[in-house]
Length: 239
Image (cartoon, rainbow, N blue to C red):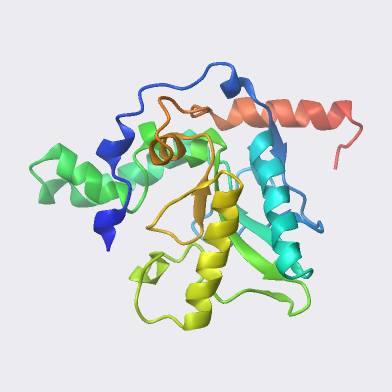
């Protein structure tokens, strides 16, 4: 199944990013909302900025459209984002932790990087540090829970995190397809290794849709959140 995943070597074919679109601002996802909520999951200490998740503005706008499309199917549905922007320093730390564990098992660097990339993206091609990648699920407000996707979001402990996998119900397969269909309809690229992972504007998106360059490059957390704090202060929101 993993043979279908976008590889590290694939993403190396995307050589640059658009300097203008890379200037696009970041926004914080609301904690409570009718359409899209940012809700950090308690895994791997991933929190970046309080309990709010940052993404590029265009990503947020697209997620709202995703939710509107879902509501046409069921008015109780909305989008929950479990992860968005990740500090490039954190990406490097996760990558290096695995690198230290496995470096003595490989003689070929490219083979080793491909192995690690399936677990945590190689920093130079990673999507989360661009603000363009999101980990999402569909929430049913009437049921008070997310739809059944066959595994917990951000749970990499089994191959059930793969989009195509065994041991999950027909309902879970249908829900995965629903999420993928509506995300792709709104311009996101899927990743077969994680049913919840989608991206817009990063190198994975560019490769998937045969673009010559990405829209966004990786950025550091300090620059992102300094601007967001300044924006909040200017708007009179200091909470």
